Amino acid sequence: MVAIPILGGSVFRILEHGAELWAWLQEVAHFYVCGDANQMAKEIDAALKTVIRQYGGMNAEEAGDYMKECH
Image (cartoon, rainbow, N blue to C red; front, side, top):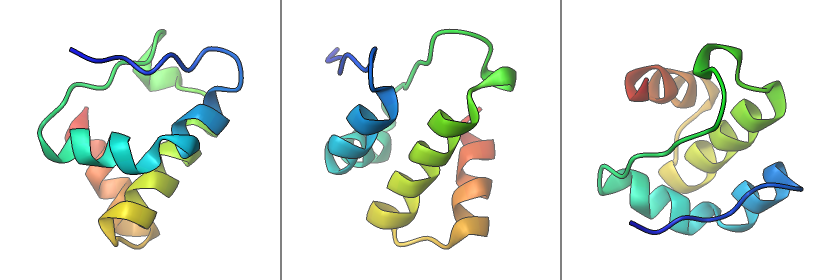
């Protein structure tokens, strides 16, 4: 298991490592965010959707659907 520490500037870290994160997600990696997934910070949710759109070639609706499937 490999972890990217995202504490402190978490949105920046997610975007900074977007290509790697997307590759891991495609390999059915598990992505954990501390806290309640239902109450995920809007900024983290938006950063993840940005990675999914950018590297997955999806539009906003498809990225949202992808996130729902991951829960």
